[in-house]
Length: 308
Ligand code: RIB
Image 1 (cartoon, rainbow, N blue to C red):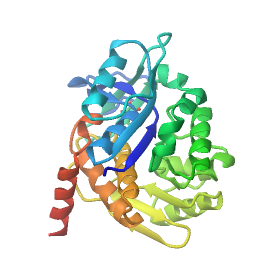
Image 2 (image 1 turned 60 degrees about the horizontal axis):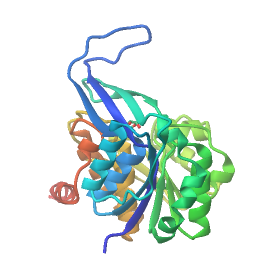
Image 3 (image 1 turned 60 degrees about the vertical axis):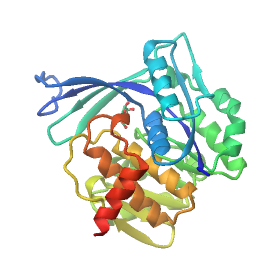
Image 4 (image 1 turned 180 degrees about the vertical axis):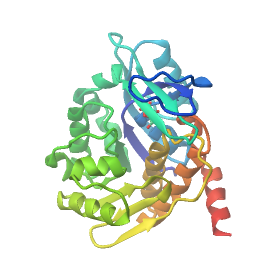
């Protein structure tokens, strides 16, 4: 039986340009290849979780346009339950403008469109699905009151909630204290705690500061260095496998989707983070967001190779 993962969040169409260097403010650079790709942090996490073995229910909102319908078509191909993807004909579907440099680093601007209209009332319509979920995963490309309503519903039903606090924003303590597990990257951890995260020691300080707010488990993702895990008693840095980076877009999303599946399957925290590190590393070797999310077999084979 596949574990049920409920993901609530954004769906975007990514407009991507490859360039040798990212432009500075006021600068125009001549880039290279352009492509359109399905993205959005919520949708990327939902697709990653589905490919890695989760039965995924996705709660989201699109506009009544071609971008929205193409995204939903793709979710159906991934066997994602789309019953709670709402449509608001008054707004456009979400779009992200992305530039990716030669080292695979990116710059992203999001026009949220319909993502901003996913409301607390929509989440309440998905109540049945929340009650059936093994784990709930949410990020911050939808309104904060929607995140709040989902967390309240999930926690009242005794569900574990993973909050991926991306994109970075200040969050109220009353929200943080209800989260079971939080997964900021270095920059997001700094914004949430005021502690600049530059290495494993400062990551641990930030993780401890977050657990003081009442979060049971903190995982700070450290890019190619892996992830720091703090469960309130012990900490560990789990290294990421080394890969040739092509595009880091959505690596964090793949990490979160994989983590949700592994935890919902009952795997130990460090095992789950190891699995997520491998899935995220594989995603970095390919261009695009959802296009780069690996499957279960590919990820397990990659882990197996690392053990040899
Ligand atoms: O995390 C990567 C995602 O951020 C992109 O797919 C883009 O749509 C933005 O939401």
